[in-house]
Length: 467
Image 1 (cartoon, rainbow, N blue to C red):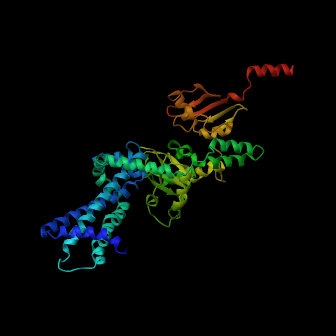
Image 2: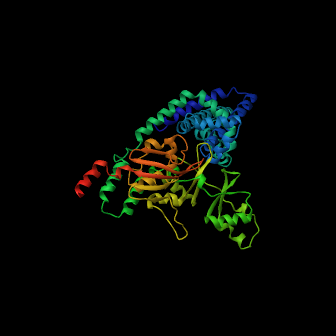
Image 3: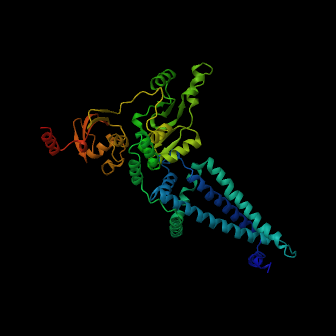
């Protein structure tokens, strides 16, 4: 009974050995070249997994700007039909190809190795098994998995260009297998996925309102911020590019120091030509040796690498990355690789604790209160901030705002254009009047919350009571 588990393995190796006895020297060389080619191919396929799934926003931007066919194939692999489905299909294609190649290598290698054993000598089973299987597996793992993946982490774009076309056509050829594997993983994912909480965010917010009626308003806002924290995207809190202070890489020293004194920021993005091509971030503290005259290095050498994040990233994930990388600023990029704006650690924390100010911050006038019902807002105010001021739901304007996150952006969606000064519109209980605008954006808007105004019948009733 103890030897029974070895019987199938002995049978397979015996069959291979019987077939391998007829191999000639030229056949062995041919098989060896085929195995070598397959190991290289396995390494490329295995390394491509790391290469594709480690592409950063700047890498994707570089692929978008490249007109080569390999870049086109690569972008189609990671974007079609959409990013989420494409990533699963690409992973399925890589796994199917890699397993098929590895199995072929093991079978051919065992076939060749058996032909190299002398026929007139009997060897222990453990020795033949170790050489034929364990040694081959070690070589395959080292040269087909470990080394390619280490190389891919350092040269991901090169490997992407090299494997883009083969993987693209392989995905088409293996489409039935890729489809079945993708669907099966989705089915398993649904089975093992944790049951979502039955309490919605809206219900939690209502509970906070009820439980905190007599409590401090700041504490209530902090609780609301914590509840909604994981549901807010970077795009909703970022500073748009038109409001970002950045410097060109060719800026002279005198102009650099003048702008630093004027802006008062501790970190400044550095771009080449325009804000879409961010080269890095300049930390003002790194300039101290230059200011003190201890070094004459060009300030461009002090630039630190930028950190890019997509606009749809959730801020709880962003906060975790900020903590891991020990940085406080990120450049926000859109789906096309262009720079949309800037987000900082302070922006993220303000979603929980409200505005954070230090002794160097100047009060920025975002709105002014005319009376209990009317306000003047700057067009760049976030809709979520305006909703807080009027104490309405944060998704109050969800049906009309489209992709906009600011008051000015929402009004552009409503007017389908940049409205002129004096343009008016009404959305639900809110009445908007554009007080100032130019050819690029809305600057100031007068907002009246009609629900707080007494109706004509109420006014007449109040007059009768007074009389």
